[in-house]
Image 1 (cartoon, helix red, strand yellow):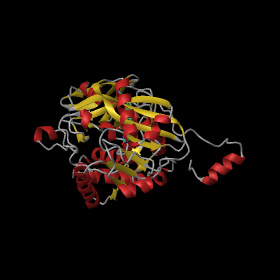
Image 2 (image 1 turned 60 degrees about the horizontal axis):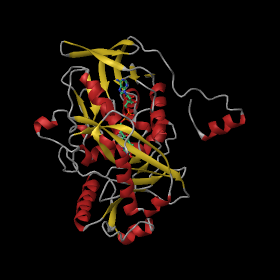
Image 3 (image 1 turned 30 degrees about the vertical axis):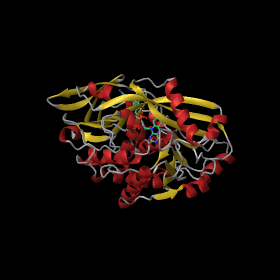
Image 4 (image 1 turned 90 degrees about the vertical axis):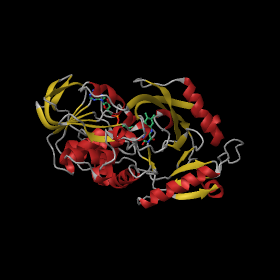
Length: 416
Ligand SMILES: Cc1cc2nc3c(=O)[nH]c(=O)nc-3n(C[C@H](O)[C@H](O)[C@H](O)COP(=O)(O)OP(=O)(O)OC[C@H]3O[C@@H](n4cnc5c(N)ncnc54)[C@H](O)[C@@H]3O)c2cc1C
């Protein structure tokens, strides 16, 4: 079914009887060419591009819960491509370009809103670092503008410019950055993949792998065994647990990250802002609530709920730049489990086991990567070679000394 304005009007006039389920609910087949483990944004995007762009249609996505129950439905919806390093910036810029055409491509309203992302800076050295980052972004074809305090004041007059500890001296603005309705991304990719013939199987947990002779031949699931020529794991915060079933230990730790939404306000924040001297970022949803978040909770866990010390820390960061936050009531907060890699950058790679592939380590920045991650993973699965923008995302990069330490912080998940 093709969605359009005419379709909405027609259905409105005829009692809304013509809408069909957005995807089928098939039973698993005994065998597929590719089984994708994990029906988050990245798994569904992989299935979509694998079938639509690379013509592989005998594909299943196995999801242990329901579509959108993981981080794809829990994040704070920010997209951007403001990275510094060679291994990262071209990849994230590819992702932003895919976001820009996504709704027309999969014929679904994902509310892609390029309202701008502004990273505030509070000192002269930080301004210099942002100038360097802006140049790196422009070299990769991205947009970047360095603003001074006067420019920032025109966009966000109510920020605390003269804060005694963290005066706002300017910001790095990426106007093409913004927000996207997160769960609509999962639904849009699921619908698009289903239309190409992909089986999306919910409530189907992968509990083991069929590995013999150094090769993976399929998976064991809560709904029986499924054979596959290729098995593609992409389970975000569950990466270590799932890959341990294949006998692999990853350079990834799982941590909880919390998000917060206030009561609705009249439009006040035109875009996304981030605090440059601590971990705090904020945007306003189309319903009016301020959506914000900050640092991970800082201990290893698979629980999807966080603790109070980080709530205090995030709110302190918010109050340092946005004092109006103190007058608002918090409506909701929740947590998601983050696959924090040791250099803050992801993996899209084959494993040493033939036929077993891995995609993960997205830390708290994987939502914006969803289209490029799906596209590049599909490229790897279809052609058995990495996409040119994702050649650095290798599992052996710690052994070979080719880390992509975007922040230059070392193996410190809470600082990436
Ligand atoms: C609070 C919060 C805020 C964030 N904010 C942003 C942001 O603003 N911008 C940004 O770019 N990123 C952000 N992120 C990060 C981003 O959400 C993640 O990096 C990204 O969503 C991870 O990829 P995914 O969508 O595929 O993960 P998920 O949606 O978690 O998908 C993984 C799926 O695998 C399934 N699974 C696990 N184990 C199994 C199994 N054994 N068998 C079958 N299925 C299994 C899970 O149920 C899950 O549905 C945020 C994350 C959180 C939690």
